[in-house]
View 1 (cartoon, rainbow, N blue to C red):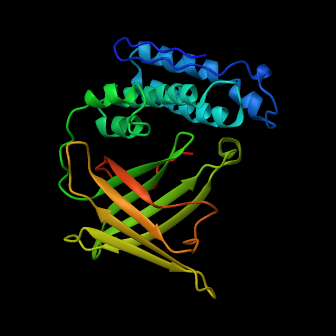
View 2 (cartoon, rainbow, N blue to C red):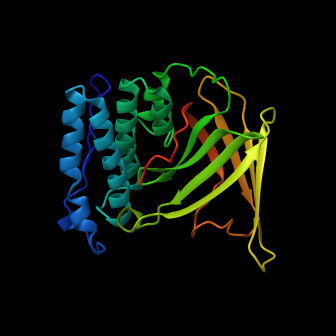
Length: 260
């Protein structure tokens, strides 16, 4: 059961079917998911009032919680229906960013499911991204339940300092918290490639990570990360650095933003 409306690009996402109808719901899930209607209403209220920052916060929580609930509660709907409902929630967050003029973050949310409505429509509404003066800034890759892994590029003593802060959201990650992993490396300012290597003490297992800064395009600046080897990279269980990271800011915070 879901519905959405398009009016000034406002999309209202659906809630789950009543939890009481679901079977074999893990402990704590029903209570957590019962908050969805209230959170959705809060987001809609802030959005209609033009308070897009507060709407963003509410919709971010909505998107993460809806993802968690859909993974843990079988409400009888099809996978296609679940994908549509979830993507409406993800687009709610993107729309709130777009209303604040933060088009990079808006694109990041729309691109999580780029081929599922309403992402194709909303992506077409975004302006072209102007290339940054340099590589400094923050880049993100989605890991689920409203959370992101980060690559942060800063000025260093011998070029750029690059820090990875990664998460893995397990099935119960919303309640139990994520697994985490991190690494740091450097890169000369005239280079487009950085690397990181890790080997567990006393083990032959290796981890090799390569970061390729891709050419700037109208749809954003990106880093392609590949992770090879059979080692853990020193990360928490299941944390994986590989993927494509989209630049969402030229600003470099002193500390990693609290995303979880």
